[in-house]
Image (tube, rainbow, N blue to C red; front, side, top):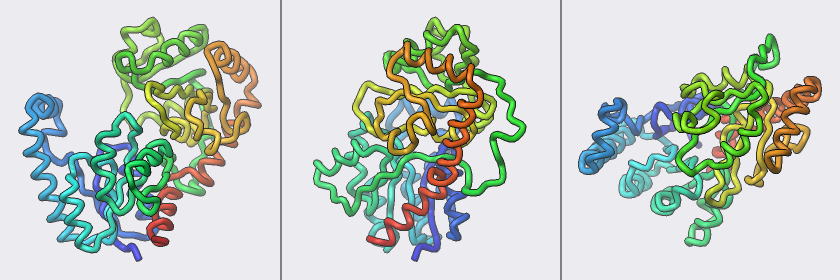
Length: 337
């Protein structure tokens, strides 16, 4: 039986606080080991130093690994859950495995981090991924179904939570997009959103948006704890996935938008969205630029239909897609192995 859990993750990670709340709500004791505990990780100057001088980075990593071993020896957790944790070495996890602590990694990245996924996944007792495509690749590498499990993203709300995003709702933004825009990585985000410039379009995210013709719709970067507030004031949230490499799993955006009561209008290049939300009942799909523009226009003009779909998506999230549900899935899987 799992009684004590150690979460090994950056304190600043979007997944850390929701997972810890879910674990605590389930009745387990939980502590955090911050994988970015070094001051060099927590200052801009320090981060630049780490990037430019790899030797310093690896020295920091060695210290963090030694600290983790001491933390595990002192706390003696039944279960160690890492979130990505690329700076925790396979050797460290191997030692912890020998201490009768169950080790698991919830790795949120997709196949573009394949080299790191391939390197660290075999050492954990359980490896969780939001993408079945990644899991299938790992099976081809010889990993067993006893070690590999699908675990999609979720929302940072609790089942039966009293807060309701539809009460006293103020729809300030017609269309919201909170997304990155790396060089040549998200071309479709620009081409799709160009079709929506006649509407009240608001974009937040990386500074690369300033170099596009959408600059007049760009409102700067936004801290993670402000995302839900933006979505809660938005009629529609547009979801456009990264498409440079193959993937099946859905990013976290649809869950966040649904939990905040916004209508999800999403591309359909990640087929898993059809397993998580019902088409035209809980989210609205689009196939191309003209289809996107047409559907946005329609749902902005038809408030009742828009809110009906948004409310259905919210109910789906509350019933199935919270991090409490995900932790229950982890408990069930580990119990049955």
